[in-house]
Structures are given as structure tokens and as C-alpha cells.
Length: 415
Ligand SMILES: NC(=O)c1ccc[n+]([C@@H]2O[C@H](COP(=O)([O-])OP(=O)(O)OC[C@H]3O[C@@H](n4cnc5c(N)ncnc54)[C@H](OP(=O)(O)O)[C@@H]3O)[C@@H](O)[C@H]2O)c1
Image (cartoon, rainbow, N blue to C red):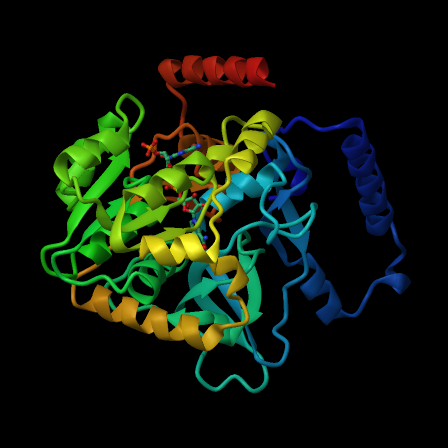
């Protein structure tokens, strides 16, 4: 597949100019005399192409473009090359697309913090990975492509019975949920926990991990349509935060408050979280989902969340008998021993059948906009997965054609 076969995306005049220049260069390359042709091995390496998703600039769904890159990545010392089979989509990728995630380098950049796949080549000094190993990968960015070169220490062997889709759903969601509940939260039997976004990636992981401890009461917020699903996964009290005041609902059931509140929302919700804690309770704040309100950056939502940020002085904290913790996996990237230890525990729980990633849906790279839309429009239950392999063309029914026209029109209107 060539770059030209990638799905039509809206391009800026600047991008069109760049494309035209690249095509011209490609033509000139093809018409070079044989004497100038590179050695056979070089040709072989040069013709290797792979699909990669690239964030071309900040903005809407169309800013993530499918590109074809040239040249097989080769592993440096301590690295492996992985043939990627599945990648995870995270909330941070939605923020990153809008320029709101500071751990993602500036565009043009390939996003993606996690994937799974097969080791295809091993660099010098790598003794614990071999060609053919099935691995889970965690990285700061760059995983949304068909092949990646990564430090072997950032890979973890997949256990028997785990699918590539499940494996790609493990790192970000489960490490985050585990470290918050057990390292900061010190979750114990008979305690109570509030999990916001309970039907999402981290939410499902946190619910499953709470269920590994005896008699934990789980309050979970989500859209009403997801309540049946989150109850089935173990949420004791599902709350529709869109039509109810979740603080009132929790107080009715648990007047004394909660032992642990996980806060992925930020702004005024962090204050609510702190007030919902009982003495000796712990607030773990780990996100600012409230800043995301649409396809593009919303300065009003940003300002509101920033203005309502929670702060407390040491004396008030002491008198309240509460703990406030902040968690960000993106800033733990130099703590690989710590992460490796947590992943080992998670894979053990998987082997025992105590946790199992819930895959909401899978999307091929060319459908990345629709995958992002699914999460951003609050429709996912569990993890949204991206697949590098091209989507197989199926003969279109009349119904599908009409649906496509409708979708295109909706997209045009949005733009
Ligand atoms: N600090 C860290 O290291 C870390 C790591 C991973 C994730 N996180 C944070 O954890 C949260 C969940 O992340 P995730 O990747 O697992 O995503 P996710 O929960 O799968 O996100 C999508 C779901 O969140 C809910 N939601 C609530 N507010 C939303 C909003 N403003 N826009 C869109 N959806 C919203 C929607 O479901 P309902 O409306 O039905 O609830 C939606 O289906 C995010 O805040 C993320 O930044 C932090």
C-alpha cells in the first residue's frame, strides 16, 4: 500500500505542497540511471514500508493521518523490534490530539503509549527476549505503527491464553488502576471506593482489581446506558452522573463517606472527592477529563477546570485526617523496576483468572478517527483497540453506501 492509497484526509495547502514535493522526489528517484542504484541490500531495506499513524497538528479527528514510512527499524543495543498486532487508545491520546497532553512530543509525531505484538529482531545485549516472543509494550509515545523499535526493558512477555487485543489493553489502564488502589490507596477488605468513568478503560480495570479484595463496596459513575454492564462487572452502586448529583446519591447510601476516591475529572470534582472522604480516607487524583468537551480545544472548559483546581494547606490536611495523592504514569517512565514489578503482579492476576481486559471495539488504523470519536462521544464500555493491519474491503451493500454518504456529510458539517 502506498501513501496515496491511505484514506482521503482533509489537507492544508502546506501539506498539499509537501505531498507534491515528495511525489516529485519519488519520481526523480525512480528515473535515476542504473549506475546510481544503491547496493542490493540497501534496495531491499528501502522497499520495506510500514503503516504508521501520525498526529500532523493539533485539532480534530482528521489531524491523525495514516502514513506509510520507509525502511525497517533496526534495534539498537538493548532494544527489540516488535511487529505490532494491536494498540491501545487512551484518553490521553484524545487530549494529545488537542495539544493538552504534555508527555506527547510536538507534531508531527506518532502517538500511542501501548501495544502488543511479536518480537521480530533483537539488539545487542538483549538476553531475555528472542525472535517470536509475544510481548506487551509500554512506551511514552510512538506505538501506533506496524513495527516499532523499543527498549527490551519496556516489553513484558504475554501469558498463555491472552489475545493481542487484551494484551494491548493491559499496560496503561491496569498499571494505573493497580498503583492507585494498592500502592497509594492500600485498599483493604470492607472498604468503599468511588470509581468515576467506571465503564471506561481505567474504570473497568479498577473495578476488577477492587473485586480481588473481599467485600469492597464500589460506587461507579457512568452514563445510564452502561449501568447494566458495570453492575455485571462488579460495581455495587452505579450512578448516572449526567442526570443525578453523584455526591447526594453516595451520601444517601454512605453518609459517613468513602475510604478511597479515584478522581480522573479534575476541577470542582476534585473538591467533591475530597469532601466525600471519611476520616483516614484517600483521594487519588489522576486526570482532568473535564477539559475535554469537543473535538477541538475548549479554552472555557480549560479555564474553568484550572480556576476550580483543588488546593489545600498542610495544616487543614492534618486536621482533616485525609490523604491527597497525585498519580501520573507518564511521569514514571524512568521507574521501570517499579513498573515491571506491577506488571508481574497483574499478569499473575490474569493467569489466576482474576482480571481480564474488556475490549469494547477494534478499529483498523484507517478508522482511527471513528475510534477516537467512539471514546470522545462517551460510547465505549471497556478498551478501544487499534489494529495496524489494513481493513479488508468488503463488497458494499446499498445500505452501507448510504450510511457512508451520511457519515461523510456529518463529518463535513463538523469541520
Ligand atoms: N494519570 C495517569 O497516569 C492516567 C493513566 C490512564 C488514564 N488516566 C485518566 O483516566 C481517565 C480515563 O481514561 P481512559 O483512557 O480509561 O478512558 P475511558 O474511561 O475509556 O474514557 C472514555 C469514557 O469516559 C467517560 N467520560 C467522562 N468524562 C468525559 C469527557 N469529558 N469526554 C469523554 N468521555 C468522558 C465516558 O463514559 P461515561 O460518560 O459513560 O462515564 C467515556 O465513554 C482519563 O481522565 C485519563 O486521563 C490517567
